[in-house]
Image (cartoon, rainbow, N blue to C red; front, side):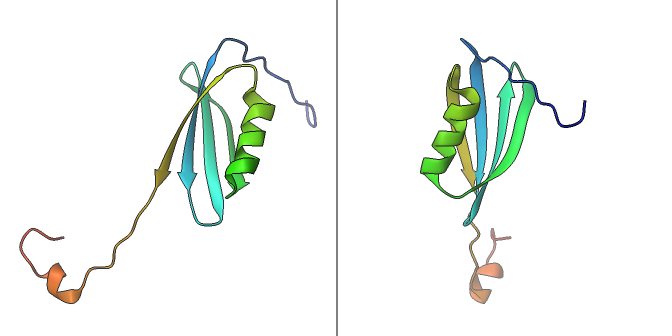
Length: 85
């Protein structure tokens, strides 16, 4: 039904949280029993993210991992060296 939500109980369940870290936001995916149960974008604030995780999944065991992309600009001389792409 439109406008209704079901609150899930995660008591004694393992919740795996993947966090894609960006400068101003976090993209968060939660999985339970190998199924995605929630996806959302959050402001880049560890405190606020922690509060959200406890609000959504506080009755379960929360496991987190993060991914941060690092881009490096190569000097023109590096780009032409063997072994560099």
